[in-house]
Length: 349
Ligand code: UD1
Image (cartoon, rainbow, N blue to C red; front, side, top):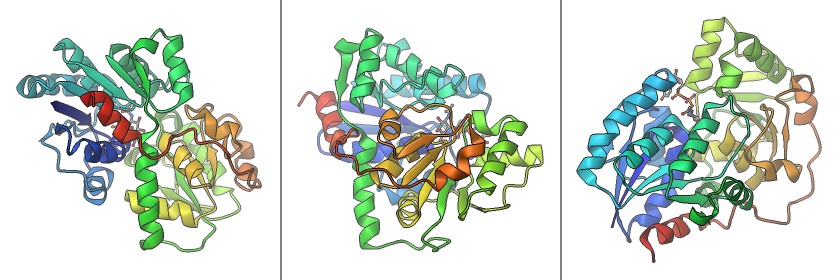
């Protein structure tokens, strides 16, 4: 059996790591990198640190407007799919790479599986929401991370092709956490109270007024804010003439995954608009404050470990300083063995 994974952006490399390990013994696994993310710190370092085999194909598409970027990937993927004719095309998450690969697969009548299916923000202005809705409806197999995601799929008439496998990000997080606890990597700071911050969503970066308001709110926090600057953030701030490093904020490059986990573990909380980091904070039991009006990972908010401040930036600093809630008693993101279930579903074992 031949399974072809398409990845392109940073969170997909993290999800690919446990899946590629689970598929190693049971299938031929071809990895195609669209090149959506291409910097060493945004891409190569993840393959190295997480032990992911080098991609078999790199399309080197790079950046662009949504249509141009997605279209270029679609055109470039078609001959690759023709060449490999996989038994499954496996796509991950909600990026433009996900959608391009989904469309390329269905056009060639190749069976399509979507990992991390069923997540919804119900915010149709987000590019990620278009990508995930369209991909779920194109897929032959929806691999859902949570019970809530399964419910969304059922409500959209997709129950018959949906399976709850758990969250593969839990798999990789647990193994990396154990590794960094045993041998903590060096970090660019070590004060024990810092907040790890990432801001990169178009809704926060692309409107200069919004971006200035977000940065003002981060700068007013009562403890050091370590802003790990995504290239989209740096470029948007420069265009708008906004200085990122002020008040509580110091600016750092994006961290490799093990260093990111170590930074969250040694800090006092997380401030972010990333999807993955909200969950990582929850699983590592660090307070998360999310700079968005809604989240796909509702379980983190229901438990009190995450709070949404997208529409109330004036309360951001107070939320970062809030007390810890009670220890959660359930495991909404699975048991750390989701990738094995993914492999079993795809190979029929
Ligand atoms: C993409 C995904 C988002 C995901 C995020 C993780 C879409 C629509 N969005 O957003 O869901 O959470 O990745 O990081 O697919 N850039 C670099 N170097 C890189 C990569 C990007 O400089 O290695 C710059 C590009 O020039 C571009 C900007 O970052 O201007 C944005 O890149 P893009 O691929 O459009 O989306 P992300 O914001 O990274």
